[in-house]
Length: 173
Image (cartoon, rainbow, N blue to C red; front, side, top):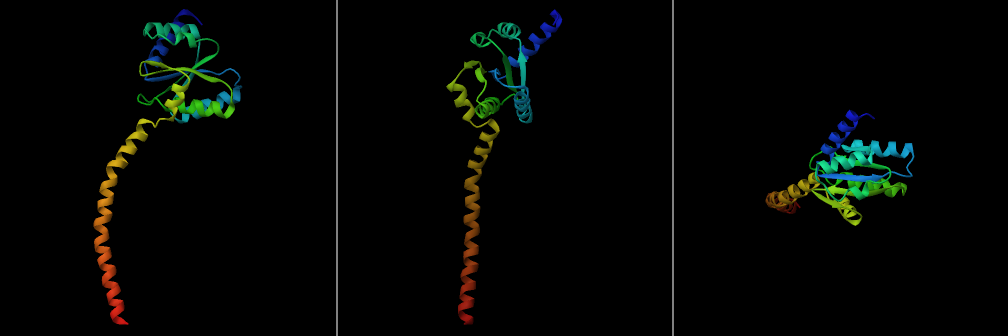
């Protein structure tokens, strides 16, 4: 790799590390088929994965004044991030699901909303609902009282019609 290519890689990773949810993964022990499966699974969820040369990633972090991730840039490292600007959870969830399935590799650390996260913090993040899921839950919660009101208002005429029908049947006997 020549100097210009390295500068371009650093520039690309400056953009990546500027995203709100970025995770560092150790892919040691995974074979080519497993990595291909992981990439395919990530791609379906609009999540990207790129193997990084640690020194170039450190340069990108230094240019952004991000401290705390340098210690995790050791050994084989890939960077995983969501293409969606507001999705912090999906990359962590998918990585942990995949790593649990194969019991190889590890999530080294993450950089989420300006903070370095490791271990149990990443596990906790992966269990949170995404923003879209939260929006759905809020919409459902807001919609529930209106649905109940509509059902209640609809029940009164239905009950009346059933009562009249029961009276009609009783008189016809």
